[in-house]
Length: 147
Image (cartoon, rainbow, N blue to C red; front, side, top):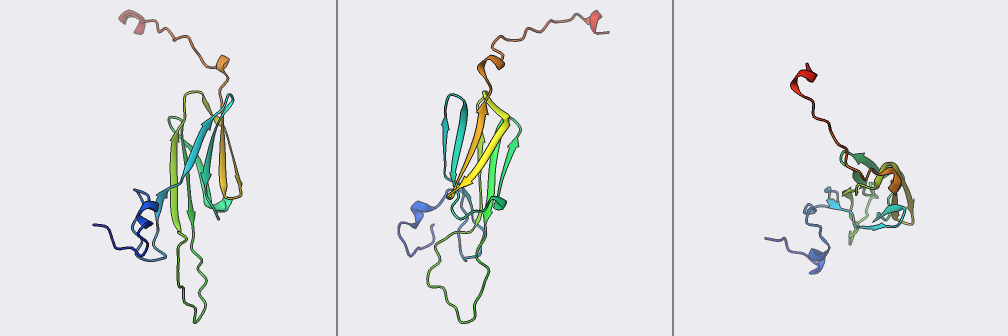
């Protein structure tokens, strides 16, 4: 059963992995919205991260050509005496996104840029001539050769 909401369209904005928010300072874990495109020489991932600073975002290259982007947006901690909030819509919490890159992605050549609330990650492609097209043939040794 879903909790009642003041805004009937709020359910449309929730991520399937987002935690229910009972309080403003409760942590929310969600997927970051992203676009992934491929050109002749590179893969480019663009993520919307409005209001985020470079220091709050982490990009990691994991095993099997997986790119992990994660971060955390913090709430404003400043409290003023006799202050009352009437509406709090901006979310705070952690986000993450994983991308398994194709075989032609050079995971040693990953760069990132943060501008106007958009994180752009570029993964250069391995040149075609550098990719081995011929299968490697393995010679099978007999038992005497292995001793």
